[in-house]
Image (cartoon, rainbow, N blue to C red; front, side, top):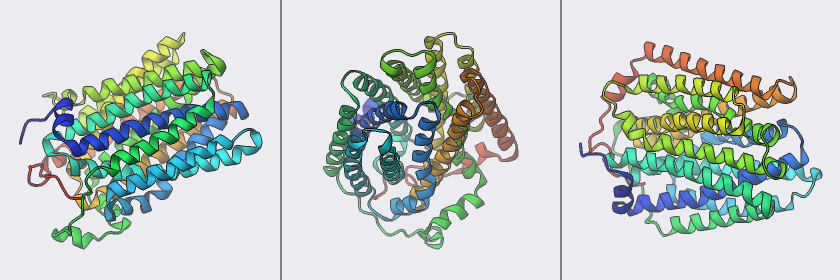
Length: 430
């Protein structure tokens, strides 16, 4: 197999991936502007943490609810076209937030947020399934790593800018920037060559069929693949606490700027920086000679639990920033590793559906844990530090469960048995 390429070589040599990546940059910067603006808007009209928690939960629940449809769409239709349509639709939807001007319009805020998340539920499986089609096998780690790096950088840049714009120039300008970003993203994808799907000659693929249940049956008969699919759910069970706890610590415990907007922006930036560090070191981590795939994931799960413990003892904002960087660096390593392995393990005809299942389970886990955190803060009246220590315990429990999984199922042996030759993972038409 050819040697793995680096980020710069991939960007220079692969124009198709470069367009997918460029569209991701633009749209995700807008997404994080939107997130920061929504958090400020919900804080203005609904005091306490539960309002923000319910908003995030609503957005997260759209993914598992729509994954059966979104996965089939990603596998049956041109994935580039799916991404363009969702970009243009989000461009219009985001403008609706401009009409939320008081508590009586919160129904509109929640409704629009749900529609926007529904469109993302179609966009993400199509993008994830498109990456193997626009990259060669020796570009795959770099492609997934760069996608994660981009998410990290845009989180940091967009999140910080969102807090800054909301603080200095008003929330409406953040929504306008977000809407414009989707138009730019769609125009970038529009100029990309359309990959046409060819009829498969694989007997197994024909026998599976194109329905959603085919993907469910495949996972049921391949427990090692199912275990890797659940890695992101494991990240989200504890990792989703970063989102809401960052808002609480930024707005209520260590506030900077108007209504804590600046400190929330700083914590979003720390989240992005940590994820950037993790994504950059993914290739190095996956090549460590004495660290297998499954045990490498276990180590990262345990490290995240310990870093949440550091957060719980934080005496000031900057220790929270330090802990956030470490937590998200581990999460990024877990994310890129599991995505790269899945792209290697999953048959091409099932990629959209299985990535949709993965994303749906991940967001369902995230929504449930976010609800629990918001409920603990606002209904049980637990302190933010107590909830943070509870999150550390949940992260430790995930690590223990993963250890049991890898002792029962030979995940490393199964992953290495998959054909990863150039012929098997050549650039597929989409």
